[in-house]
Length: 379
Ligand SMILES: *[C@@H]1O[C@H](CO)[C@@H](O)[C@H](O)[C@H]1NC(C)=O
Ligand SMILES: *[C@@H]1O[C@H](CO)[C@@H](O)[C@H](O)[C@H]1NC(C)=O
Ligand SMILES: *[C@@H]1O[C@H](CO)[C@@H](O)[C@H](O)[C@H]1NC(C)=O
Image: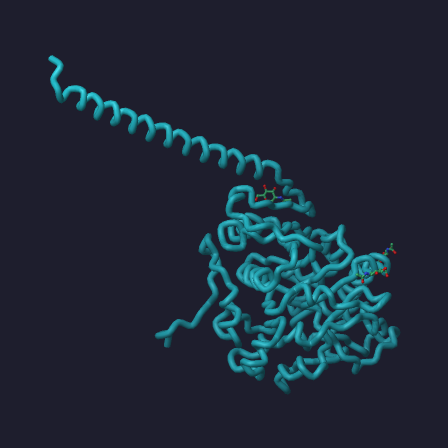
């Protein structure tokens, strides 16, 4: 029965069997790895504490091998808020900060509970996964009954705009921190902004509205103010009593460098809350600028008590007009930080310098957020 070719055939058969065994083993190994990762994930999700106000540390546990060398050195805490309908803005802003610096930036993202899952997918499934961040849940109860119910106060539906009042609450361990609005793009090294020196006794630094550089962006007659009278009703007793000069240059609180030790010592949060609440009762703020009820309390509390930020670190008003801002492309390129304050956002249909913003935007892996764009061929 045994033929000459038999041994050969047997060998081939054995080899085939070995191949099958190897394949089965590989498949098993693969399943085990997948299973372990799933366990890690559920473990991880389980560990999270989603109680309001609790800091959720997030590590890229699912892709440890893909992590770049973690950044070392002094941590630069950056607080930014994430509103569900503007998540694309936060993502672009964070990407610009991170990509233009080698510093050890840690983002503290303040958001509402319902946004956490969406945000996490965006941050973990894209090139942003190496960014260090903590998600903090904003407690709308902090503000309960404390924002004016009047329809013209647009911020009333945007509780997150008040998060900047609570900086030491959200970043308790830091002495110095940066706050950034979400409609900004950073083109310089954030380390440089962080190193801006605050004068002794100052809890914050802002960029003044009437320095020549930022005033350039204001379109005359557009109803934009650059002094206190544009924000505060100086006919009201509570404002008069403060003895502030109405023509004092205002500042834009979309970029803040804060000394949190001073902030706590001076009870800045308490003072800001006080002025916010008083406004609800006495309507102290000008309504000409519907843009913000967040700003006036800051103007009062920091009247002649703030340091200044280099104007190139807060080039603003990019959102005041649709297309065709006064800034030259060269100037915009040289700016360290661009701010699209105003109605025309770079993720909207018409805006100035959309192409600058687009460079940092990362598409939403869930597909929920889309910048509105005029497409070629649109009529
Ligand atoms: C936050 O949302 C999760 C579901 O995403 C829910 O289970 C949890 O109760 C919420 N927490 C609060 C404080 O609302
Ligand atoms: C912050 O303020 C405290 C108290 O005035 C001061 O001792 C400290 O040097 C300041 N820190 C920074 C980074 O400016
Ligand atoms: C901080 O300010 C608030 C509002 O003015 C006040 O109620 C609170 O007692 C102050 N806290 C401290 C520690 O001074």
